[in-house]
Image 1: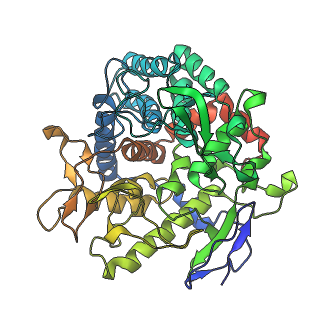
Image 2: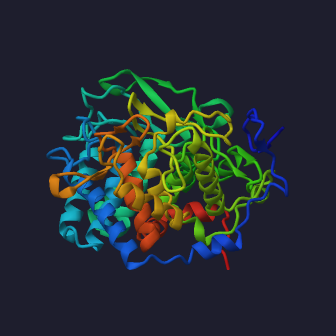
Length: 468
C-alpha cells in the first residue's frame, strides 16, 4: 500500500495499517475544528492550567545561570540550550501578564540574556548559535557534549526572541533585530537538494568560526521543526540571507492515514513534538490552506492547524490501541514524545510517519506532549493533564512535584510498567507546554509573534490567504 507524496522527499515505506488518502490529498478545515477553536475552559480548568503554567515559569525564572540568566537545558545539566532559552524569552511576557513578575523584571531578564548571546563571538557562526552554550555567560561551555551550531535550535531561540521583542520593545527589540538580520539561512542551504542543513560542526570546538563541516542531515520534510526553520528563513530581513518562499512548498508532504482515520501530512518519525512545536509561535488558525500552485509547484493544499489536530488525534488513538500492551497508556494517559526515559534521552517513533516505525519505548509518556497539544485538542489534553496531576506509579512515585517543596510541576516522563518517574525537567519540554497553554487560554504568544515584522514578511512572501 502506498502513500501520497508531494514535494522533494522520497516515498517512505508503508505499514499494512497505513492507507493512502482516500478522498484527495488536500487537508482542509473541518466544521469540528472550527468548533474547537471556540472552546472555553471552566473555572476549574483555568485553575489547573494556571497551576501548571506557573510551575513551568518557576523553572524558567529560577533554574538559570548567573550573571547572564540563561535557563538550564535540563534541571541536572550545567549548560543552557538555545532552544530552551527561546522558550524562556517567550515565557517572560506571559509571566508579566499573569503578574508573576514585574514588567521591569521581565525586560531586564530578556535584555541580559540577549546581550550575553549577541555580544560574544565564541558562540555563533553565520549568525547561528551553539546548541549548548554556557548558562552563566552565553559563551562556549566546556561542559557541552557537542560544539555543533544548530539551525533549528537557533530558530527556536529567535522565535522566542521575536515574542519578547514585540512585548518589551526598546533594547530587547533592537538586539533581536540584529540577531534576525545576521542569521544567514542561505549559507546553510548546502544539503542535498538545496535544503537547509541541520547543523555545522567547527573543526576546532573552541572556535565556532574555524573550518566547518556541515551536517549531511537536512530539513526536508513538512514537520513542525522544519516549519519554524523555513518560516524564519523566508521572512529574514536580510535579502542575501533569506530563502525564497517556494522552499516552504518544496518540503516533503507525505499524506497518510491510519486505518479509517482522516489523512494528514506526516512527520518523519511520528514523535508528537514535531507536530506542535510550530504552533507555539505561528498562528495558523487565521489562514486558509497554503497552496503550492501559487509558486508553480504541485502538492496538496494544507491547513496546518487542521493537519496537526488530525495528527495528534491519530497519535492518541494509536496510544489507546497500544494500551493492552502497555498499562501506562489509556484514553487519559497519552503522548509519546522526546523525553528523559529510564535508560536516558529517548525519541519515540509511531506510525503513520514517513518511516512507519513503531518504537513506543514500552509506553513511556512525556506529559508535556499532551499539554503542548492543548490549542489543537483542548478536551483531550485537559483530561490528560488532570490525570497526570494526580497520578502515582504502582510504587507510589508521583508524576507531579509540588512547588511548595521546591518542585517544578510535572516531571519530564513516566512509565507505570517500569514504576519509573523521571527526576529531571527539560527546558524544551516545559517551554512549549507553558506557551501552548497560554495560547489556548488567551492567544498571547501567537499575537506577539505574528505582530513581529519578520512574521508579517514571511506570511506575505509565502502568499498565505487570511480566512474570511
